[in-house]
Image 1: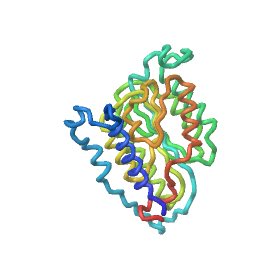
Image 2: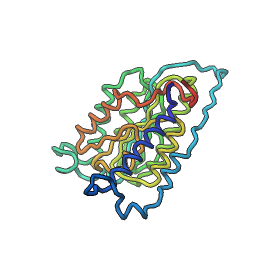
Image 3: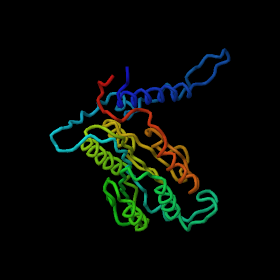
Image 4: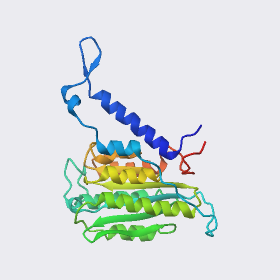
Length: 266
């Protein structure tokens, strides 16, 4: 019996929470695990309860829309252009300092990645930078030139509305899912150098619709909040790592099949 996308996500999260729980225990002389004093007073994380208690959203698809079933792969990108991306590169972030700042290195990595994206893959782009938060390339085909042009125009500045971006990207992928009558592949790819509020809730929103998040943290290490809520999280300390992480996103197989969002599929 096949697990639905939602149930597979939920199962993975429950396993992760269990492993976190047992890793916080101390070893007694007899070899048995005993809780640390801190564990006895820690309250249940309300966000974790939301993950356990949530119900998947039923996506209604009408076959009378004039659309047709397609197996198109869809990648929706969220690129962080916040103020911190203007920070100059150094030995700890950027490696050989080939680029003047983090944003220039990120632009190079994304453009390098586009060279490996097959033409049959539909892509879209959402950014937040000095000019605000917005979609600058709608999800679609034959838009590589527009994508590169949009990347070049990004100017670092502003905050990090990452949670809002994740919700927006999820909505665009769900719209495309409906147009393809429930067939194909859908991924949300996030490149960021900063942390933000409400990440768990935004990731929960994506999960309820069966949309997996592939995240790459640029010079923020392994402790980024998205690590606990993504199908794949990679830490990149330089732009070569970022480029490779993006390419790995393209070839990685998802944990669950995205051809159907039906929670009762077998």
